[in-house]
Length: 106
Image (cartoon, rainbow, N blue to C red; front, side, top):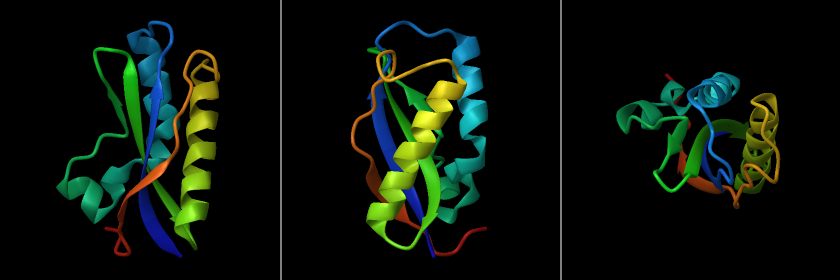
């Protein structure tokens, strides 16, 4: 297994409050990239939101292949969004992409 750092972009189609951001960040905490050398060194936040309501989720995923890592990251992102009370209409996701590979976890 390899540890991948995956970025999943998306857009909030409605305004979200601080409480929703907090719930989303909490749901994503197990996949926080700060647990990897790359995520820690580059200070990658699990959730970044831009002024135009676009966002990026950066997740750590263990997988055998890059494709499986991207699929798992997309699944984790969707699940976390649902846990925060969002769905495909209020927070559609773009394609997951590999941001980095880190085979040595801290």
